[in-house]
Image (cartoon, rainbow over all chains, first blue to last red; front, side, top):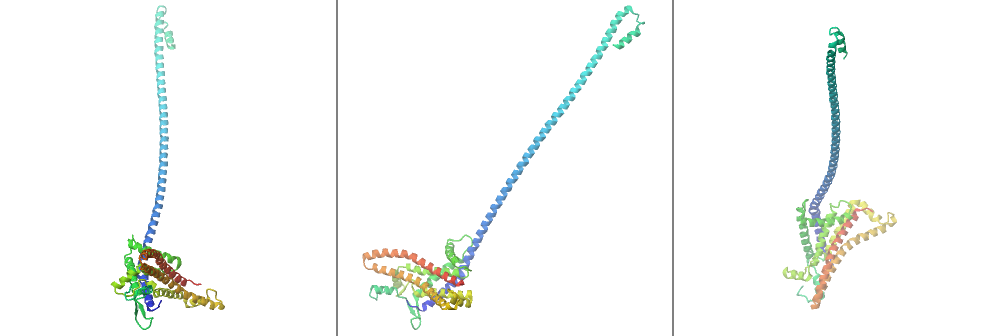
Length: 156
Length: 269
């Protein structure tokens, strides 16, 4: 154990090594590490943001889908309603048309009946006149009773 | 092992524990331990040159394995410093702690070199008659480090609190500012200021010196015969494995105390 000049020499060496480390070793490595830490932190933050965005987007997509479904069902309901309306309208029209046809047919039938009645009346009156003529020709002077006979023909 | 001397246990140990001293002036003080200086400079140059070379190409992107290793080391030191020192540690304290840890660790690690093999190598290949491998088992190295830290401690104490604040602290802590307790306070602080560098340096020196001596004792046992060789080898291996722990632990303790002392200097009482 002898203290000598070696001590001072070693102290100087120590000082030089510390100076060297402080100046040339520590700062570049610290810069590199801190830059990388920042890059990683930024990356993680970006990933977090991306995740958040994705969540928002899927939420919006779900909303859109929901809205579209609602719209579709609304359209279907409207279409069904319209279809019912069209059917109802068609039913109404058909009924009116049918009624009209029935009415027309009835009127025609009545006309036909009236015409037949007229024809029959004409024939019956002619027949009656012919019959009466045949009977009266023997007993009644045609000239004397003409007024009376035409009056009867009118009443028939 | 020197051949000129008679081979006794005392001469063996004495030989292994003598420095390669070089006188640069009159008197015992003007001596340089060339082995201590060269080994520590070599280790410092290689270690910090390597760190500098790796760090110069440091990228903020995907690091190479080299860079990842240095980052692990730096992060380990930085984490320790962060827990103790609350201030801008990147300006000085953390890099200084890294310096202490790496340098002391490597100087301690020289203890793993087998003493006799290295002795033969130094003697026969390099022509050096006395050469010790472990700079930290030279008390000059550990005192140089501890006293540097001690000076830094006083420097930061004055820098942070001002010369008045520092003197005030010398006299008014830990017992209070009553003039009656000033002598007690000053005595207390004096003891603290003396004991800090002593315990700081002697702890490291003692551990490394003791480690070296135990290797030498085991080596001596190995020279006594066949059974001594067998058990000496086994014991030597065991001590070397245990020494891995001591080498790293002492480097770590030295670094932690350095950080603690400098951090304490930054705090006001």
